[in-house]
Amino acid sequence: MALLKLEIITAERIVYSAEDVEKVVIPGVEGELTVLPRHAPLMTMIQPGILRIGRGGQEEELAIHGGFIEVRENKVTILADAAERAEEIDVERAEAARRRAQERMAQRRMDDIEWAMAQAALRRALARLKLVERARRRRGR
Image (cartoon, rainbow, N blue to C red; front, side, top):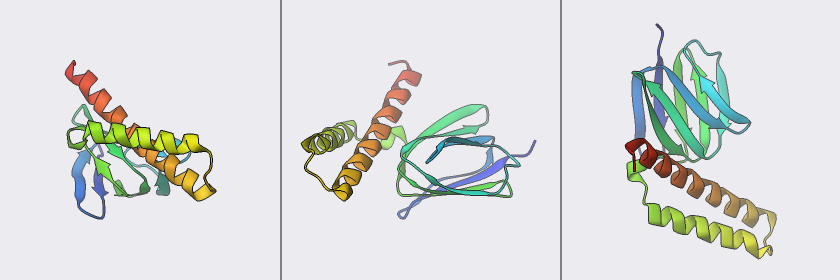
């Protein structure tokens, strides 16, 4: 069975690297995108959300915060603005970021750029909180 090579890279580090990935489910700008072995070449943008990696019959999840994905010859390269595992997330900080973004958006006296920045911050915070909640449920808490 053919498998995928996956690399998730941010400006700071290589977040994930494996050569035996069965599938990758990415939050794309036009909806969720599943990449399987022998996928057609592709390049697209990523939006903040949960990235799922199928490997060895298990599924791993990361919060991803924008960037690009390239698929070519069974290799998936993700250049992410940020990516983190559930255990790396500070829940209190993510919750505070969510509240700040919602408060800014409630003000209504913003230009388009400020609105887009607040909306992006909210999406990042919600992705982090969602990943932590999913990890807790899997552990049975």
